[in-house]
Amino acid sequence: MVDDKRSVMAELYNSTMKDIKEGEIVKGTVVAVNLKEVIVDIGFKSEGFVPIEEFRDRDELKVGQQIEVFIESIEDEDGRLILSRSKAEKLKGWQQIVDDVNEGDVIEGRVVKVVKGGYIVDVQGVEAFLPMSLSSFRGLSNDEIMTHKYRFQVAKMNKQRRNLILSRRDVVQKEREEVKAKLWDELVKGQRRVGTIKGITDFGAFVDLGGIDGLLHITDMSWSRINHPSEIVKIGDKIEVLILDFDRNNSKVSLGLKQIQANPWEEVYGKYPSGTKVKGKVVNIMPYGVFVEIDKGIEGLLHSSEISWQKKMVNPQEIFSIGDSIEVQIINVDKDSKRISLSMKQLETNPWLEVSQKYPVGTKVQGKVRGFTDYGAFVELDNGLEGMIHVSDMSWTKKVNHPQEVLKKGQSVEVMILAVDGENRKITLGLKQLSPNPWNEIAQKYPVGTEVAAEVVLNSNFGVFVKLEEDLEALVYSSEIDKAQAAALKPGDKLKVRVIKVDVEQMKIGVSAKLG
Image (cartoon, rainbow, N blue to C red):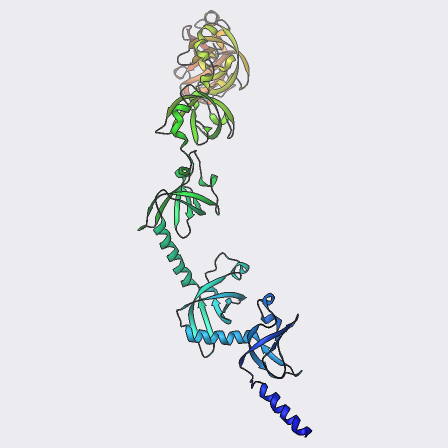
């Protein structure tokens, strides 16, 4: 009787157990979750075990949840039923791919691993291979790549081997074309759009509008003068620009940045009438003058001729530096040409108007040597006015070949006013005029026929210059000396000469080396 009961119970128990086989996919119920495993009841005599790492969304696992699992082993070494969640997903996913997908189709997946030569992509639980050459992930880090889902094209599929190769290149290209076409349809002149600076050249910057590149020309960047686009933008900047014009057929878009702001030149006549005194900042220095920003987007030119009353020739680079704050006066405004002429000297009284009264001819004044030319020296007087001493007015008796033979830069000298021309801003100075003209005395001291032991100063093509005494030179004409003798002479040599001509008017002495 007992045996009969046991037989009945066994039959009843066996009738409730499912007939399962290894390699099958079955449904089960989650009965417990621990740190290592998920325990699943599939209606078998014992519960099955699934490794916890096979579940991507572990936090969402709940007791009582229905899941599909793959039967790996009905009884392992420990007598346990071993199940797999990932293999169930892969088999089911692969079957779905086989049924629904063909080569050339577009599917969605997530990159889960970086391998040699490419990436592993999870597509509906199936691992597919994405070659690096077909990935189009340029500029993205691996972390960024694996945090998003992407669309891929099935490049090759082997159903028997369960092998799937993907490509993203063609999908990306198609998506770009779609975005570009949509963007072209949306473009309107005068429209504002946000773009990203992707390239900078000397003439402007290229802006990515989200699929279409536009050119922001340097002249459309700022109402102010700029020398290079990099002064305004840098690569990667996001900026708002205005659509100035576009040509869809030639894929050209012209953009504006300054046009978003009001044109500061619109009210320039009312704001800056001629004669207005303003402060500004030096923004550019050129040989002919400096550009001064007197307001945001408004610059004027301070020409070198308008810097100082005192000097006709001024080098702006010696006076100003970029960023200097200066006061100027508005001379002229041309709104159409966007030009403003400025002056510094107009802020001061013109000293040349009173120069004739201040420096009457014959006046002796002190000055400082400021520079030289081949024909004279510039001397700065008080008030910054400059006069010039010509080489012919440096010595009564000595031939001066260059002013630096007599004067040094920075030297303080006393000079005489010889002539004043206020209209042309010229003051002629003399150095030799500080002492009396000695030529009448020289004529008496060296009458024609006088023989003198002289010293050679210069041997030239047209004669030999000799020194009769300190600061008194005479010329031995080439016709008055033997050619061979003249060729052998050098500065410092002694030479006996005879006076043959004294010209008081021209302040010259002619001598001869032919004494016989």
